Image (tube, rainbow, N blue to C red; front, side, top):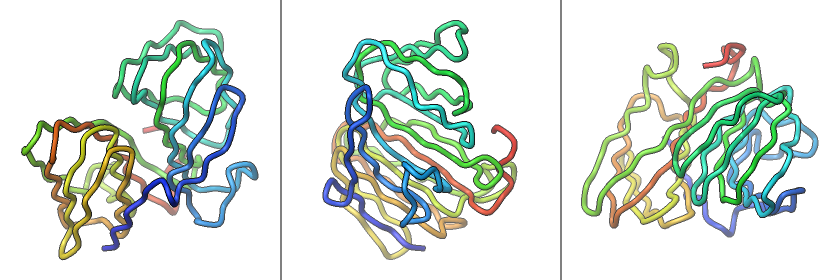
Length: 207
């Protein structure tokens, strides 16, 4: 098991039509979002305009949640899906998607047919703890990568003999994660987003 502490120093920041996007992690490590050659990507973006159109990503499934503010998404001209902070929504990256509302969001993208996974949110009060068990949750498969992002607060994260002190707007990436528990203890009232990813096929169906 490998724990990597991801902080602002390692993030890649760039502009997009509606604001600024921050790439937190990408696989493989040398892949480029602009080339659409990545297997998966985790990022956070600021949405600074009231209305914006998402870039079409037909080769990817997407998960999204606001970290602050709220947003309403319209896919292919359908009814709006309103998201409050830490409500997770999943959709086809190939859909024509329009967003309304200013917010800061968090995103997971998985390449169709080559990666499988999910994203969800957790909340811990100060001093409380939880165990995150990364096995058997993905159609009886185990994720090989788990990314725990702290949107607010802070926590101590331990797996095996390794430990990371996690601050707000930082992440821990756990690789070769199948089997052992990851222990999370909140140092303050905290909000987390967790992405579980299994690479190497099996991702052709939308979870």
